[in-house]
Length: 589
Image (cartoon, rainbow, N blue to C red):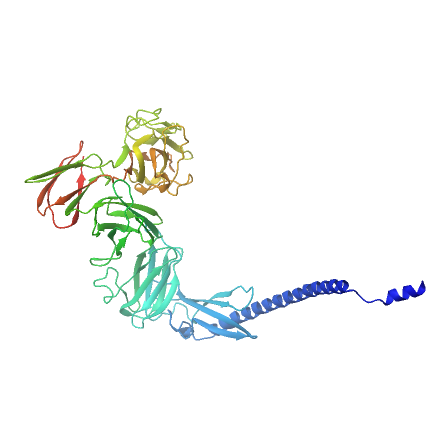
């Protein structure tokens, strides 16, 4: 018994025991190693940040002890001896040092800079978990208000509504050296002051940009003959102001179809913008074509007024919706439908518009005649409108112009015949309430595409507030049995149309029945906004509103006559040349 126990104690480890023991040892060792590596990385990161902080302080101390006239960039404004970027090594680590220097405290009576703003940024691209270290401070001369050499540029940047654009990048490029001499951004007021600019005639090209915005720049005579915004001249000890206008980019979505809504692929056309960079030189001018499916999407488009002209060898344009020229607003998505028909000799497209609203007129009779030739056509439906609500609520389907569906008892449609006002509550208007009016149901007759919603007057009393009139739009495939969901320009219930003539969101396309909802508010108890007309444009069955086309014409002089009940008849002579041409007729009541 004793011997057996001795033998058992002397027996070795089995293979399984060895493997299990090794695995346990490896797990413990890896955990210890991971902790050790983390500690090393933490220590390394802390060391890198300490060295970067010391480097920032060192660089600022070097600049502070330099002669004041030398504090500047070798390729910047103000000019000096310091590089804009450099790579420095400290403690075995490599750091990227960036430098920004600005003259500040501009005096417009005389070009002076009382001090210079110095910003030092230190980064380490090879350091793990490193955050940039920055230091900003002022460097002042021994005697304040020292007169600087050169002149000053005051760059002001606005958006399409005349509001300042903060954070726009302004690049000032010396024409003489063809190198960028200054890159900076505008302040909260959309202004950038650049002091100490070396003088020169037509010396500086300026380019203004911002992420997601359009670009505007100056041009030399070599780039553009007679530029509308020439390169800037800077005079010694004088201020040179210049302004730029940029805004958020938009998109255009083209479709080319037949009058029966069948897509037509590869239709060629040109598009030219109204903005010019020189006399007769448009900023935008392109030859374009839809794809095989009859579609073309253009992104990064600048807000502008664009004109479309057909250039296709097989098709004429029978209509464009919205009518050309059309306006593209900032930060918007605009659909453009081009209706085409097979080319047939010479052709004339006639667009009939209301002179007051500039909207297409449906039901206008367009006659084209000459000796031995006469043809008349009627323009398609262009828009539906309402100009009177004095008959009160309770009308579900739109039958008469004077009634509507419902309101919240905070609007007045009786006091001023044909207008919607806020209700006068004992001699004043409630500044904390919103008056709403929901229209009757309009029937467009078939499935439709909707384009713009507008109302009169175009502007409201200043004291009533910036957006005292707002609209929402609702459509349905059926006139009953479905909920009416009111949406704004982004296709959701949380936004509102606040500018007359705004594009209607494409979410409504394909429906037949329409309603609108009006919202009135005021910021002043003695002032009310007013709505006298509401109208919206649409196309039905791919027949653009207010447009007709005459084809197979001979080159000759014709008489063009347009009549419409309630409008003054318009008549003029038209000379038909070769190819496609367009005439726009404005009709007055």
